[in-house]
Length: 167
Image (cartoon, rainbow, N blue to C red; front, side):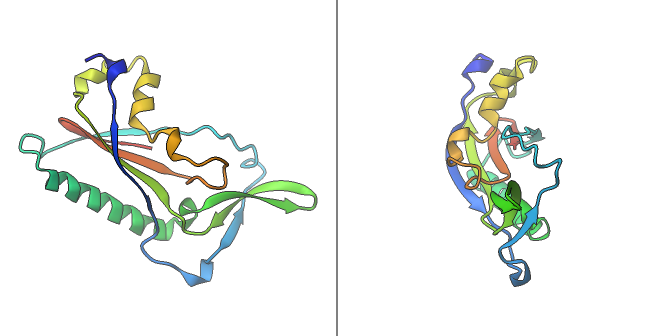
């Protein structure tokens, strides 16, 4: 199978919210700095590959256990890093429109996928745009307008002998 044919089938898409709500910060906003105002709607992409120690007898419950652990850990992490679970918004400030983060605990996007590809199908990673487009959450999972999509998104999927995380 050629690298350009590697497809990830999306099985589940959900929002992970902070594990606990703190009423003292409910609906607070964080104004972005002047440097942050140079907002670029492009995404920063990171890919992580992990050995799937249970791949030979790969029971779906083992993978499901890993996914549940990841979601639980993410929800606990979002308690401390709650702005990441918020959304961008625009606010008027002295006649000037500025970006800010609404800390509304709406959550981060968590996408689960699967592929029948093998790690060899990734090739030597020289044409990374083809790889990245299949291993990160697809843009179709984002709503129109920057105030409605999550600030962070993860896609977890199993490639035969590996589990990858793309964000």
